[in-house]
Length: 138
Image 1 (cartoon, one colour):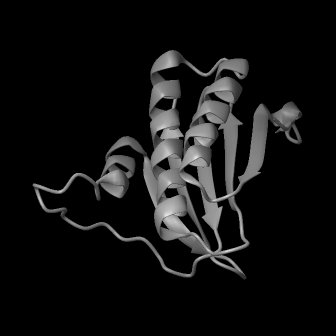
Image 2: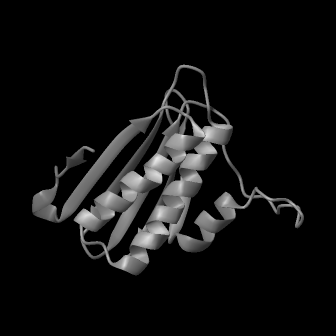
């Protein structure tokens, strides 16, 4: 895992890692986030929320953002005792949107969870694909 501390003097810590778009790597993204959040001493209740947001966004990148030969990337920035910003980028141009899922459906609630747990969230276009981001207060 690559933990960077470009803005250490400002209390900022960053972590960024690329993954092949496989279901196993959505799990690995969450596991990596868990380790980094512990090393940053993010409070346990906030850690759980950030891990869930990473998991949901990584799963969406694998399921809906997969482009053959391209990776998805997970990045987190910790603003000591303020917030954790999560970004998941993939190569698909398809933008996610909130929908009311069928009550009988077993999936389709990921972004609803992100929207409920995050202070704010959104989508940014990239040259190739997009980045879905969320800000979680700690």
